[in-house]
Image 1: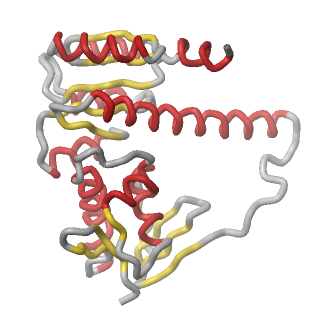
Image 2: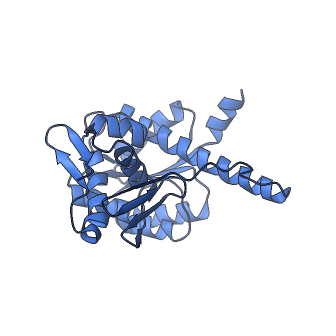
Length: 253
């Protein structure tokens, strides 16, 4: 009963101008037990996202009024609500632009509804875990307790001029700190924890992103491209190597 109540309370905003797609997704989400709201253009999407509470936002890229990237930028100035982009563009750099603007994930149209629902479940679980950890820490501080009475030993992986602190979630390339999104951190974590081991796209998607690829292999490619853009120029060499037809690997040299 408690689980059902929690699911009903989960609110999702769909910002999509194609009525058939919006209605189809709405019906599926209602069937899953979510509460759903809709906006058909960018300006209405911004207004609703900023004036009401939502647990997750599904945001189309090509919207009238304001495009999806601008909508996302305006949301990110005030809120950190998880956002999954819906895009008809399959180019890697288009998706990187969405990640740069603050998207948590993206799904390429046309999509299988099972894939979208899987991405939504992952995003909501991450959101719930983050909120639970924050609430536990705040409660401990309020009572004067130590939120980490037995802190674990810091785990740092260092190689080739890169220092990766898994507990503090910090990356240094040389002496320069590099800011990573949660998804980028998880992809790099999987590769750094398996130095010298070729990791398939399927394994990275499962271990780092929490879902199966479901036929969209370049999901992982986008995150790797984004990591390369942030790391390689500073490092002066390519850290993450491509193994054609398989996946990626970080080698000691």
